[in-house]
Image (cartoon, rainbow, N blue to C red):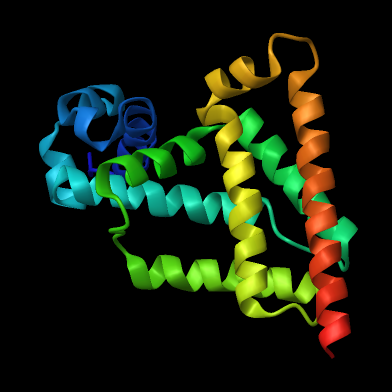
Length: 199
């Protein structure tokens, strides 16, 4: 029976995604990834190289997946607020990418791998913000996107901060989502107003 290389890679990526999300790069164990995937750990080295390279493959795949699943579309501040709400929903349902990005930042600092590919994907996302908010400068669009991504990424990664600041209560996720949408909409509107005044 022939070995199904693509299926093995998929199994390894799925197992590695869970392992890295839960334990970070330093805490993840290749043995656990291989066992969860049901393959020999030598396959990891064969297909992905070192553990760092497997982490990079996982992070890149998750970023592309989320960017594809949650596009920035429409026109105007409300459309950008809608994007913020959909990104919050996505991360509330599946907090893997926020955890991976936080782990990357904690363990690697500003050093990123696959910088060219990731930069290209991020440039596309900033371009989408500029399409939704015509006339807004690239730097402002980037800052707006960073702000919203940070707000949405924080929800699944920092639940203790929410509990400390807002206290216990029902409906916290709905309230937080509404606040993020309102914030994103207001910031987008302010940037559009500034761009119109400068024109």
